[in-house]
Image (tube, rainbow, N blue to C red; front, side, top):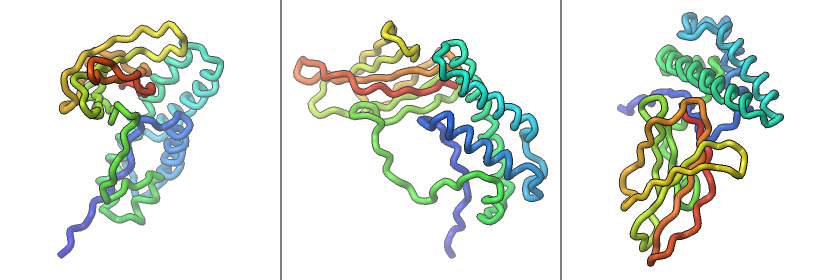
Length: 211
């Protein structure tokens, strides 16, 4: 007897553009409103719609580069993503593992087969949210013949006066857990390796919003 595969929604939003988050959220809100398959969502859909409209307005306002508006937009993105994850969990357990029912929710189903995820850069493998607010976990990629590594991070302020915090690392076997960061803030991450007493160039920057 083959084991039935559970249907799970795609709920990862790291690296997803604001426009895509808004599009996904709007589709879910539209599809779930009045949907008899999901009569008791954990998030009030009218409240969710208002949150999406606020997010949409802030995306437009942030185009002028205002740091204050960008911070408000990032904070509102966190609110929208949390609502989407609550709704996704509800749909997952309410669809009775019926794809036809699941698809009426507006969510996209996560792939049931594992795929190899390429590293984000030549030295940063993966970046994810930590277990608590204000935490981010970073995985670095091993560099041949490297004796040590450095990870640095900074608040993404869009200007040349970036202030970096640098962490020396003797190995990349374990993930690096960063704590005490500011929620709803976008951070930049770079890494480099020490090979034969010479540091490599810093990797390309990875941006990630802390929740």
